[in-house]
Amino acid sequence: MTATGLSLAGVAVALIIMWANFRPWWKGTRDPKALLPFGAGWLLGALATVCAGGALGWGAAGVTGLLSKGGNTAVSSLIGTGPAALASTRMGTLTPAGGIVVCIILAGVVLLHRASGKLDRRRIIGGIATGAVLGFLPGVAAQLGFLPDAANYIGAWGAALGTKGAA
Image 1 (tube, helix red, strand yellow):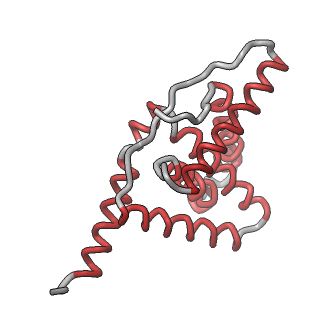
Image 2 (cartoon, rainbow, N blue to C red):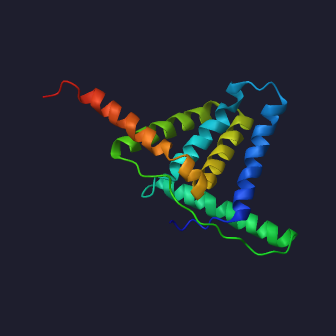
Image 3 (cartoon, rainbow, N blue to C red):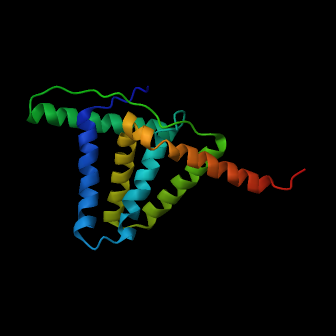
C-alpha cells in the first residue's frame, strides 16, 4: 500500500483524459501510429509507479495526488458530494537492470516529446498522467504485473549480453 492520495474522482479525470485521446483516433483513420505519443507516455507513466525510491515514482505519486485533488474539488463543487478515497498499490519491483530499461524508455519518451508537435506533446503528457493514475489502481496493477517483470527480463538479457564471454 502506498500513500498516493488516489481517489475515485482522480481516476475519473484520468479516464476522461484517456477518452479525449482515444476518441479522435477511433473516429479518424485508426492508424496505429497515431496512438504512439499517448501510448509511449502511458507506458512511462505506468512504469513510473514501480520506481518507488526515485524521481519517477515521486512524480507518479504527485501526478496522482494532483489529479485526485482536482477531481475531488470539481466533484464537490459541481455535485456536492465528498471525496471517495481508493486503495493503491504498485505493480511489482524493479531490479537494477530493469531500472536501466525504464531509464531507456524515459529517454525515448523525452526524445519523442522533443521531436513532436504541440498536439502530440499534449498527448504524451496526458498518457503519462493517465498511466500513473491507473497504474496505482490495485486491479490495473494486478493486470499489468508483467510490465516490471518484462523490464527486469529485458535488463537481465542486456546485462547477460554485455557480459557474455567475460572470465
